[in-house]
Every structure is written in structure tokens, then in C-alpha cells.
Image 1 (cartoon, rainbow, N blue to C red):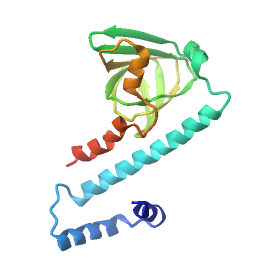
Image 2: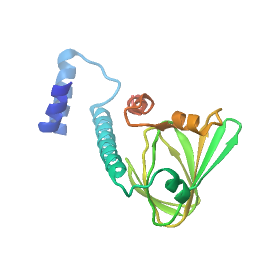
Image 3: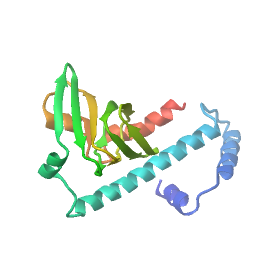
Image 4: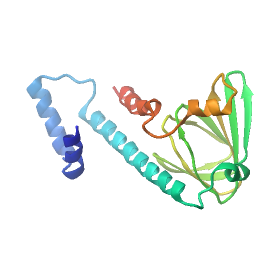
Length: 196
């Protein structure tokens, strides 16, 4: 596999060359497929894009954590107070983000809804930059990590399915330490499955 990765990095073939190779090997080996070349190419490009984004996010996260001005712990809690609410089988997490703040979110393990209740923010994900204006809701996919710029004071809410009421336990359920977490690497497999 390392040879393939080196070849892709140092001497990638063009889409046309890949298509010719796909057609040639299909014919030569008598292969049958559940997808077209175009579908396979698009899935491969999507996986490469996600991988590139995740590498850059890990680099950014490491640099931020090395910066002595990076805010964590009690000061972060003071600037971004959290409100925890529980309902039957649900944990509701509300966070306040003051205007002008840039935030790097945690890596999400589970698919869950989110709601921007108040404010306006710019959000960078692996899909690009989006402006969210309250009221707004969406769904967070596994493996998502965002950079958020609060244009105004914002109130952001997430809802997580869990039977636990222990915040530390819940965070272990819903937050990944890094992109190597098995629960978020499954999103690559699911992307392929959705397109077969």
C-alpha cells in the first residue's frame, strides 16, 4: 500500500488514464461492477478531500494547543458557558459563543442534530464555508470538526441520544480524541456503501 500512496503523491495518473485502466482491467479480467467509473472516481475524490481536510485540522489543532494564548479549561468555560439538560434518552448541550470569537470544535463521533438558536456565524467544515443565521438547524455527521467564527453573540445547541447523565461519560460517547477513532473512520466506509 505504501508504494501506491507514494505513486499517488509523486506521480498521480489523470482521470482519463484511470478510466482507460479501469476499462482495460475490467475487460481483461472479466470483472463485473456495482458502480460506474465516474461513481468510483467521485467517491475516491471525496475520500481524498476529507483526508486532506482532516490532516490540516490536526495540524491546526496541534499548533493551537502549543500556543500559550490558546484558551482551554476554566477560562474557556467562563467565555463559553455550557448548559446541560437531560430528557428521556437525550442529552441537550447548549453553548454560548461571544461575538468575534473563533472556535475549533471537537471531533464528533455520532450523527446528531444541531440548532443555532441565536446569532450569526461563519462555519468551516470539510464541505467549505457556510454562513449560518438563527434560527437554523442541521445534522452533524460523524467525523465533523468545525472552525466557527461568531459574527454576533451566538447560542448553539446540540442534541445527543444517550441514556447517561454523566457529562464525562457522554463526552467519551460523542467526542473522538482524533481522526483515528474507529467510529469516525466508518464514515469512509459508509460513503462507499451509500454509492454502491
